[in-house]
Image (cartoon, rainbow, N blue to C red; front, side):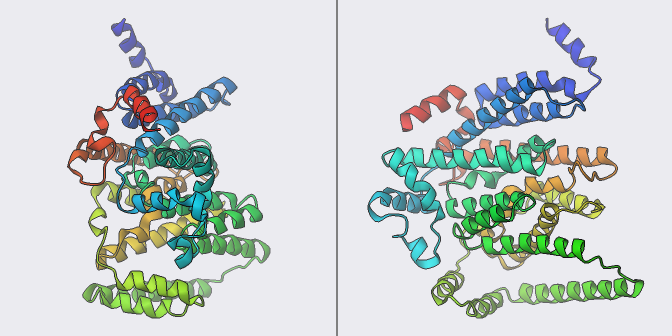
Length: 442
């Protein structure tokens, strides 16, 4: 029996034929350690999409069922997070929602950020204030949106590969700790996806993102500029002369030199940037908001800096995205693709800023969580980068490296104080343990 199985594997001539063996392997791992088994399950879905034939309805239904298993198991895993610090603060507000309502809390009073509690309010009513179900349902909503809406709209053919990288990214599992900011960046991605289909939905999602966390203003602005720039280009066809291109190159070189000079000044005196930041923030029209942000900047004490490590896995992913962006021909440039490229450039500047100044890693939170989605710059069905085989290999290498990093983190989680799942022993929890944990925690 075993020999026959190996003989069939040897005779495989198409990658899509590996789908069933990898799916069975994925289920075997998933039953033992669901959080790791999700990766080969997603890989089996990707292999089923590689065939050039139209996907059958029954196969599509099976893939969606597998995605549901990934979403539910990931949500149970995330909801087992140790409750402390920010999570404890959010749960304290959640516990009082039925008495104080959505707007009677420090987040709305200081920064008008109420969308998280608008989402949690019906959860509080429906679950009779259960803290565990609050975390689980929040994670379930987030994971479902990421899997079934964002990823599929970014790439209908390669979304499982994007999800492999996202679900093997350490910061993705911080969603119930940075709840407001995670909800905000997720809504930014939803708005980015909607920008090509509906202006009204783009503005709705953008406003929800901004009133979830004020940092979303920057990303919404980037998406808006991308949309307007392409609309201007489409309506007003401008032909650049050779001399115009020379002036553009000179301007870009000057801008690069200016950025390098400012970076050098910051490197020599990192604290100076905080006084400049306060001066800029002081120009904001809403004084209560500006004073709140100024207070956070002035009181900065390096909190969370030790969590940011630009390790080899993030370097590999970032360099791969850089290669995709440089090789892209951009003949069929869309607002979605241009927005991703511009956000990626901003993320590179943010990474450099954090590494130079030691500032809080939260300013690059969108990239740290969702850098897997930026791979769709290369995995674009409408405008493939040539040679596409090398692009695929680079993407698979990033996915493999990320998965190895996730496994390493799970092994060492027992030594991470205050930042762990299942009491620091996630690899010992089988799917049966997940189910027992879920019902005991309700």
